[in-house]
Length: 80
Image (cartoon, rainbow, N blue to C red):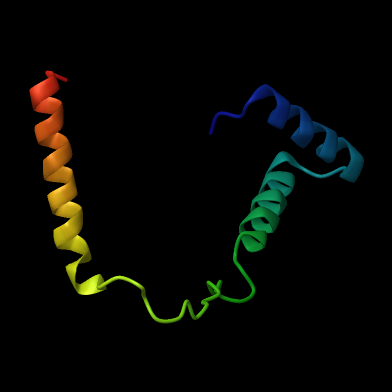
């Protein structure tokens, strides 16, 4: 394992303060870091009722495709 100089300094400082071995300090730091990254509860995205759509969403992909085709054709005419 290769440590960045700043990380090595932190580990050596911790070793000195705790009078612990390199192995103990690194294992404790990894354990704390990995446990902290596990969320206590699953993340949930809030949802909101947006009401009745004002456009026909069944035709949204067809409309998007038509608009993209028109834009592509316009760019070809302009030479872009």
